[in-house]
Length: 140
Image (cartoon, rainbow, N blue to C red; front, side, top):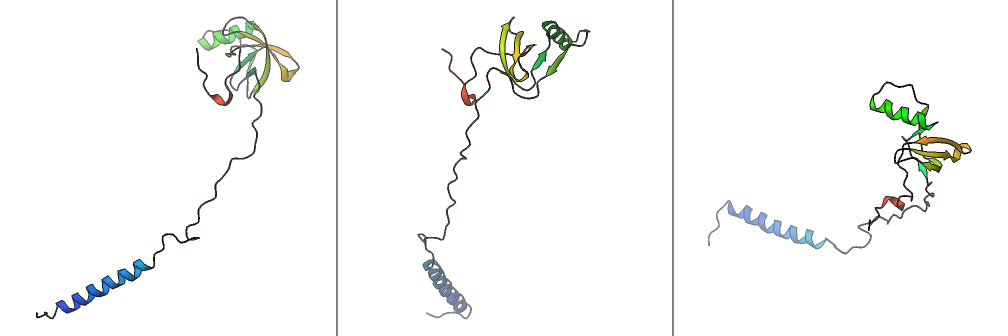
């Protein structure tokens, strides 16, 4: 068999290329220890959750001095022209004690952080505290 002049360099390159891939493949270790460093497992902090205040007024709830102020606040929110109610908006969780309920939108409360100062709120205050961690409870 006669080889042409241009095929000899191609044949030589092919033989060298196959030999090079065999030597490169021989240097790969798949089970080499300490080559792949695994990240350490992170554990959560040991911070314990503070107990929830209950009952409480949350941020954004209205706290009025009297029931009449609470009625005026509701009228002002509806757009009626009324005197300015003597109310404040709660800026953070505020511990309270429920004194009297006068309907679903009227509750008389005593603010424990202010030595039992009484006021009225339209916030929804259920009888039982919400489930821990915000998990829903099943209704039966």
